[in-house]
Image 1 (cartoon, rainbow, N blue to C red):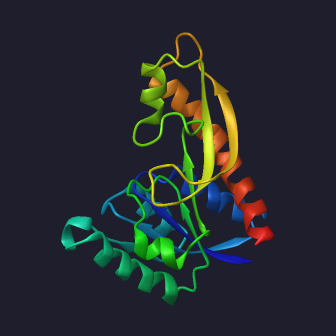
Image 2 (cartoon, rainbow, N blue to C red; image 1 turned 45 degrees about the horizontal axis):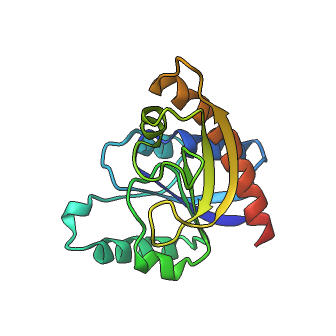
Image 3 (cartoon, rainbow, N blue to C red; image 1 turned 90 degrees about the vertical axis):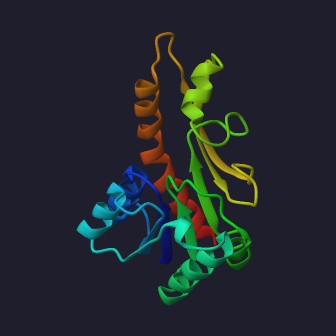
Amino acid sequence: MKNIAVFASGSGSNFQAIIDAIKENKLEATIKLLVCDKPGAYVLERAENERIPQFTFSAKNYSSKQEYEEVILRHLKENEVEWIVLAGYMRLIGPTLLKEYEGKIVNIHPSLLPAFPGKDAIGQALAAGAEKSGVTIHFVDEGMDTGPVIAQREVQIDENETSETLQMKIHKIEHELYPATLQKLLQRR
């Protein structure tokens, strides 16, 4: 079983899907740490309910990305973390973590990359009048949603689609695809 850390910034629905997959023996991994950059985010409550250790920080309390990533790295090493799994973490990963975890940082994004990278991919797809969107799981590199794609699944955008209805469709796929893809990935390496 691989030791993973999940990085999240918000409600943590993908974090919960990973927890559930582990409990259901669909994902052979141990969450050793939750890293969150938003004190007060609901994901912290989810971690506490599951007794998962957490490191919470506010970037504005550090002089640089390197400084807070060095602190994160220390926590990762203390917890013997082998893989980093981003689940709604709204910060770019910097050189400190990229170097230490090269090829072992995975992200999920609510679009069919390379279409609609960055923030509000769902809003971008709707504004562009796209007929489809979806979910991409990819390795993390120094760019924003530019790393090699591991898995994708398409979602049709209906004529009267709203941001809320499209988000629900995408979350449903994310919660199935992410744990299944992580299982395949972690067992190969």
